[in-house]
Length: 255
View 1 (cartoon, rainbow, N blue to C red):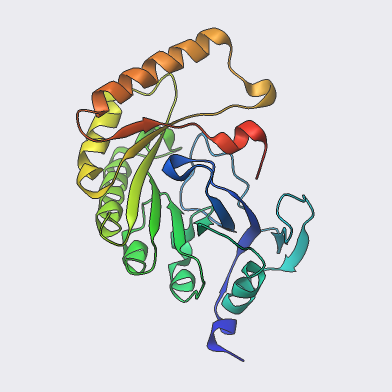
View 2: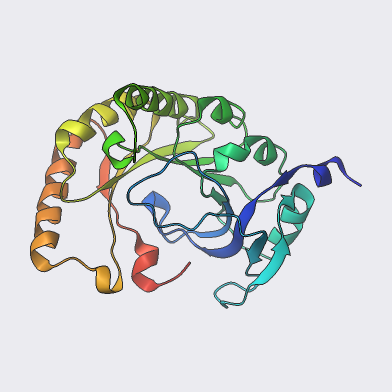
């Protein structure tokens, strides 16, 4: 039995789809969603709890899932990813994948690794500085986190900046920042965050909350949000390339 069979991680689901967020929208990826997260965000829309099994969609877009026993070994994960072809990269998402940095460090895949992280665990991030090719790093504004005091806010900001520094854009890696915004997000909150990480990223993505179905906002709310976000972008362009990209996968209903 290989050593990799003894290293396990709780994985919520594995499937093939297209990237719906950020500058790589539309790129074909395999997605590995890890269970567990160290934050509690107001706008979180992802079920990352570990139900004891991993949902595996072997045929992309089929909606047919096989139940695999959880946790999953490195060898198992490498094997179930093999059917997915013509990939841009393998997205490691969650939850928070940095909680499982030791597991990720041992992965041996044909495709580049695309880390989607809340960027708050610098000691874990340090383990992957030579492993990941793409880093989609969130900057979670402190007001979006539930139950966080002033001291914790300061530590949260410091840890986030340090993660971006460790996983910064270089000759072999593209690191960019995503910031979820709505009609109430203020420039006074966003600007210091962007200034702090600007030396380390290729661009900043303002990601409007993207409602679907009956949750769609009324026209007045939409207009207020558009005006606010356009104003944010205009000001942030003085600092770094800033783009507005909603969650496109929610628009056409893919995973």
